[in-house]
Structure formats: structure tokens, C-alpha cells
Image 1: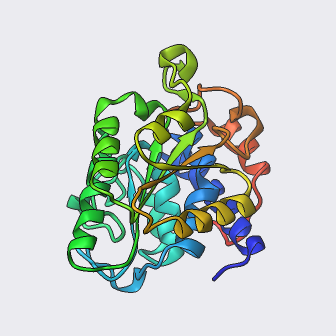
Image 2: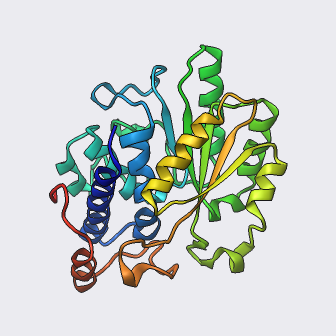
Length: 281
């Protein structure tokens, strides 16, 4: 298990990787990726039981993670690489022709760590429900995790799956909503208000927790609390408040970096704010 300083160090390097990957091909989604760096780092380096050295797409003897908002693939790819699923040097191939690191993750490329194609928003919770039910059927006590964007909650399929999970008592599932308040077209409140998310999820029959997704200690503590609430007859959801573009001052506080790549000058400015901790690829 990693200590908080180590986790922060990994997350710092992940943020550098995100900027360099997106800048390198002038394509991708840096904003949400930067905001979720602490969360996904904590999942893979502290919380989940995984086996990166022997990845199997249908593995039953480990925890599973599904990234529903697949456009933030840069943060996931970086964490997977540093966790040992594939060489860190492969991050340099992000979004390039014939790469395994597609803009939206897909198992068709046989990239270790990827179990579903994501990018068509709204589908990940349904897949996570199916995986969690499958674990129950074979008496596998490992957990299933999923991550969703707040704008993604405007998709009706999310709420169908939420209703299904509660009705079927899928209590080995921990889903997290990245509640940064921004989506591609602007603030979620202006595009389509989500209302009181805590009350909504509770009314759907879920155990609801909240956390600061950019405070590593709070992330670890809340995820452990979520684990302690599994097995109680209800699925668990965490409303995770983050800052889009976290770590890069000119990317924070705006939706404009949801899917835009920095130019050379902006890349240099961003990297100057992000320390090298594990070494650049």
C-alpha cells in the first residue's frame, strides 16, 4: 500500500503526462483528466486489488474498474502505465495511427486494463452492474468500481441502471460521479441542471457519500468508507467534487479545456506548474 505522499507524487506525474499526451497530438481532453488524477491514482495504487502483471479481460479474482466517461482516457492510460499494465513509454503513442491508446478506450486494441469500450456516454453504469452481478453469481467477493462525468448524468440510461442496481441489491458496486460542474458546452447548471444529486441518488436507493476529489487524503478515506459500506444491500455512490483542469492555473475555473489541446506556449506554461516526480516518458 502507498502512503499519501507517494500517491501525491504519482498523481503529479500523471498530470504532466496528461498535458504532454494531449499536446503531442493536439487532440484530447485535458480538463477532466487533470481533475480526476488524484482519484484514479488512489484507486489503482491504494484501494483496488488488481493484477497488472497478468491482466485477463474476464478476470474474476480482482476488483474491476469501468471508466464510463471515456474521453478522459489520458488520465487512465497514465495511471495504468505507471501501475505496470504496459510500458510508460507507450504513452507517447496516444491517439496516433495504429496505437493501442485510442482517444476513447476500447478492448479491441487488447490494451491491458481495458475491459469495455467507452465514450458513448451513459453506458458504463449498466456494464458495471452486469459485472457486479456476475461476481455475485460466482461468489467472488471482489468489488466493482465505475467513474462517471456529471454531464453524463443527463443521459437517461444512467438512471435506468441506478434504479436497476438498487432494485437488485447490487451492493458490491461503488460508483463515483466527477462533479466538476462543467461539460463541453458550459456549466452543467446552464446546460441542464442536475439538481440535488445527493437527494436524487438517495431516492433511487443508493448509499451516498461525498468527497473532495482533489484532496488525496480525503479521497483515500472516503473510498475506504465506501468499501466499508458494501455488502449492506445497497449500491454505493460517491459525489466527488473536483476542479476541471486541476493543477494548471489557466485551465481551472472554465469549461474551455474540456476538449482542447494546449499550444506550445501553453504546454510549457502548464508543465512549469507540474513537477517531474517519476520521470517523463
